[in-house]
Image 1 (cartoon, helix red, strand yellow):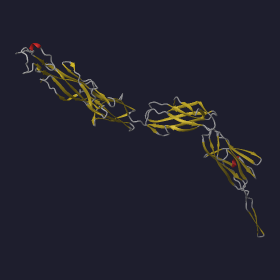
Image 2 (tube, one colour; image 1 turned 60 degrees about the vertical axis):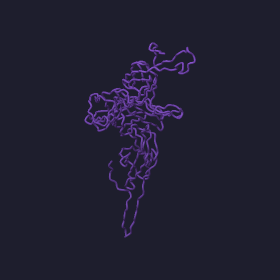
Image 3 (cartoon, helix red, strand yellow; image 1 turned 180 degrees about the horizontal axis):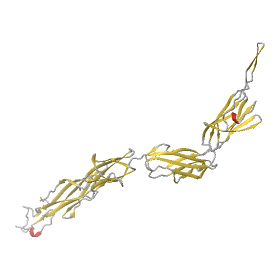
Image 4 (cartoon, rainbow, N blue to C red; image 1 turned 30 degrees about the vertical axis):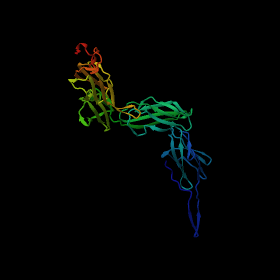
Amino acid sequence: MSRKSRLPKSLLFTLLISFTVMIIVYAGSGISFSWHSPSADSVTRQSRPSVSVKASVTEGTITADDVKMNFNGSMVTPSLSASSNVYTISYTPPAKLANGLYTVTVDVYDDVLGSYESTNWKFTVDAFPNPSNWYPAKDSTISTTSPTISMRVKDTYDELDDTTVKAKLNGNAVPASFWYNESWGVIDKKAGTISVGTANLANGTHTIELFIADKAGNMLHETWSFTVAVPPEFTNLSPADKSETAGVSKVSAIVENGPVDWGSLKMTVNGSTVVPDVNQDTGLITYNHNFTTGSYQAYLEAKDILGNLGSASWSFISDTTPPDLVSVSGIEDGVTITDGKLSVKFKVTDFLDIKDNAVLALDGAALPAEFRYEGHTDYYGNYIVTSKKEAYIKYSGMVANGSHTLSLYTEDKLGNSRTTSWGLTVATAPVISDEKPVTYGVKTFTPTISAVVTIPGSTMDPSLITLKV
């Protein structure tokens, strides 16, 4: 406000009378301040406190034009009331004040000094619920599309009203949950947590607004933003990671969290770049190829339009071949056995585990062969298997004379199987034993002449035996 021009009452008059100097001084402040409200450095629970101070004068009067008030950096118009020589300067904010520190400066013109006298003080408003522990943090960047947004709330003086909880996400109302703090079965209704569930947020900046009032009616409206920056994610990997498949004809994946910069897409298999088919509408990426037996490492990478890089790496095994017969002992196709004894050993290997269902058969009938995996016998006599990708089959037994077929069936865990066969002939000569009487041992002229005639592994046909004396 403008003030009218005034001459100060403190004047220095010099009167020259008969060369004598007379000095008359009217000096000293006529204003003092007291009763600051809210008091200096205090905390008020009022959201619209009456801000006031009393100014006392010893001489003269104070008018509205004599008073200036600065409230927290802004000039405001206070009211002025008087009681005798004490003036009350007061100001009530037009709206509720947010929690925080406030500064007040009051200047009053002193007619005695001809200048302004000032007083200033600070106070803190703590009326609204106080927010803390924002998640996601304010102005943070997160790498998930489905964060649970939350904020803790605590009121210093009043209970929180859980019926007033509301939330908005990007300007749209969304459901919100609230629960009071609880410790050792004691519920603290002055403190709690607001949470908002989300799903599939797009990359970019999102703004959350949370509302809650205390039972005194002080409504907290807290707003903050965070950024979702999730790189492209590859899902539905096929074949599945670390899988074992009986033949693979394609590798595929679906890319999510777009929009994708399709020009940045790269795919390799065992380190070699390949060119897949891409369906940009569905995000399906497919590389068609008949994979032979072996172990494979697939890799995909792509950027979104913001430059965020995502990648996926996974491995799989393709197996289209049966166990390999790497060692054969005691048999070959077309062999002739002359002692009736079949004694064979086999070793089989596979890229994957071999089943323990191997069958060694003679003319279609299973033989009681011994089967064991690669391993060793420990100190206590226990056989310890060290690999199921190697196995041994062993058999020893007598076989009848004639033509036969020996076959060995083996199978791996994916059902890839092999049957190997050998033709063999057994031609074992008869064996004569236990001849009687012993040569040169005849003591009678009517001895019984006998002998035992056998064919190992066969039944002797009596009609084929001729005795000559």
